Length: 273
Figure 1 (tube, rainbow, N blue to C red):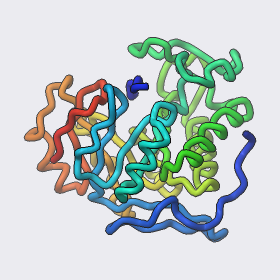
Figure 2 (cartoon, rainbow, N blue to C red; figure 1 turned 180 degrees about the vertical axis):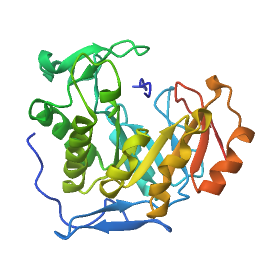
Figure 3 (tube, rainbow, N blue to C red; figure 1 turned 30 degrees about the vertical axis):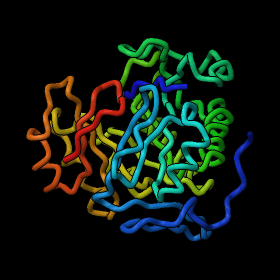
Figure 4 (cartoon, one colour; figure 1 turned 90 degrees about the horizontal axis):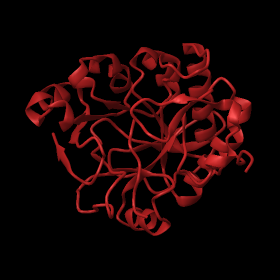
């Protein structure tokens, strides 16, 4: 789960086959049989993620920024693109957040139990794609309109939590695959976050993996399927769990992961392997 607070539509038609911005060295563009294309980062791609703080720190020499969909202003997207950066939009796909501008659009019947540890959040019934579709499609449209290159959909593991709904892995898989298709139709890349138990089944449909605390919790190798297929694994370890660079960087380099150390609040501070 990622904390979010920064400063300050029907489904889209299929986009023309061109990436959002020119591919940087080490990147490629994925193409389907229908000639729909999107950005595909490579293993080893450098990155930073920031959701909190007075402003985004642009001083880091990285290729990719993962930023909040709603809170990131258009001018910042344009500025980073002008510097040749790629941008990923964070959106909460599996939980409702009461501070979002579209919070009132969620039908009450799809909003479940409180997300323990994250005030203002409640789990969503991801088995009801028909009800969630207009809202998530509008979010993906906004991601595309702002000029982001990819999507970071959070909380796709509701089936493994006490959501208030009877969800199983197949519900999680169906929803994840639906999101991947909707992202790709818009020319957006998309990654999965955590859920190592579904890595093998979802990898063919996703463009990277983003992992939290996999070194601290000892499950990183379960995501090797992404590296094996030429896709990056972005890994975050947290200082609140007692992690330091010396605890995971050597292993991350062996695995080929792009690993960083962050505060849990995901502010500007970062240390790179």
